[in-house]
Image (tube, rainbow, N blue to C red):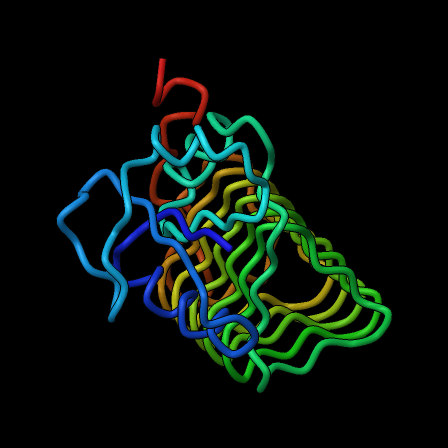
Length: 206
């Protein structure tokens, strides 16, 4: 199996994957880096020469993670799920997604591809979490919530049931979301309020 990335998020992903397979190869543009006890084998362009889909892009930044996934010849096929997490049998977890320790994903939740559900977060029944979302540690997402592509939900935020959050939005740490959030909005506070809009993702890497 292969991991792209050698930062802090990748350290956690590596330890999850080592629970099932201790033989891992690390790729990062910083070829002098170590990921815990693994030396980086080569840069991302060198990884592409392997032609393997047995890879996970372990980069916490949603924008950069999407960019790198888009450059690969094959989409990531590995899913990293910590043994201490609780995943409903009726939930769906997409490829390239990371589910960290003590996470709860409940009935009929749909988790997209290349998502991060971080430590001790909870995603309740019938939620729809789109690709490239990052749900930070200790976030509580109530039932029937929809989260659009690339949105970041900060540590300790709470989303009440039935809310719709647009794509590439940012929910600040500790925010309480009681009304729908549009695309690209940055929302903070309790109750959450929009303070600005981010530049759309398609403009970032033009």
